[in-house]
Every structure is written in structure tokens, then in C-alpha cells.
Image (cartoon, rainbow, N blue to C red; front, side):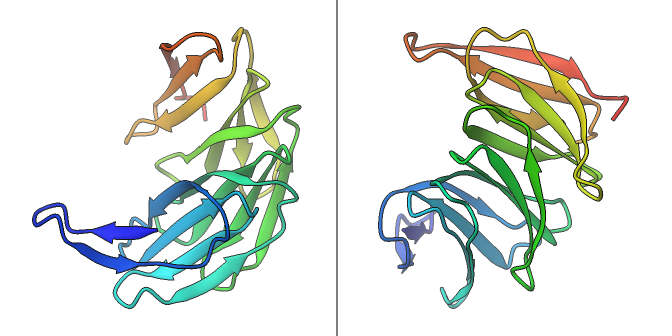
Length: 182
């Protein structure tokens, strides 16, 4: 994995660690940490300035497909083909919650602006909203006829954007869902 300076096109760092393909990457909103999720089922946290691997988050039984940081950078969510979302303490590497309920693998995760809710989109065609403090599934959004490729909260946390697509088609459908009750 490489970090690039987009102004100069220079490769700033090469980060080693995953023994296979990387499926997701994210910068902490705080800006000090970079995370990657890979086919090896591991999530790695790196210090941006030095490239040092700070944590290896292990626990998924299948490859890690999606990652997202909470707004304060304290918690990382990871979604996997093992059909779970794990919430990790970024500083200690401790798994805080394992969110279960999807019947197929997770393709996308995102935090609300308050970081109290994480949303997950799955190949099972559902979107789930989770309370991160209790692990409770607050709401299941159903009715999609294909996998959920991407989920994103608006910056004010009042809307949820879903990208929906099928394996056979090369286009997606965007749906805007009100999230004001969450």
C-alpha cells in the first residue's frame, strides 16, 4: 500500500503488512492514523508520519471489506464477509462490539455525525442502523432488490445516502433516506 502526495505525484511511503489484496482504506478524521482492511481478514492501523503499524486488529473470520472511523477518530468500524461489523478502540485495539444480523457479507460501513450510530450495507440487500454503545440494531431498511454497495451519512446526520447495484448491471441507484429519527 502506498501513500501519495497528490500535488507532486510523489510516493511518500510504502506500507507493508497485508499478505494479500487490500479492500478498504480510511484516514482518521483526526489525521494521525491511517487504516486498511484486507483479504487476510485483518485491519491494520498505521501512524501516517512514520508508517509504523500501530495495531493489527484481528477477529474477523473472513476478509475485511469495509472500514470507517468515528468522527472523533476514537472508534473504527470494520465490516467483513463473515457478516459481522466489529467496533474497535483505535488506541488499545480492543474489540468493543460485534454487531450481528446481516445474512450476507458487509460491503460498506459509515458513522453518523454524532458517532452514536453506525450504518452497514450488505450483499443481503439490507441496511442496518446500530447503536454503538449497546450493539442494538435500531432499524433495518429493506426493500432493495440487490446488494448495497455503499452507505454514507450526511455531515449533519439527517440524511443517509445509499448506493444500490446488482452484480449483472454496471450502474447503481442512489437513494436518499431520512435519518433524522436516529
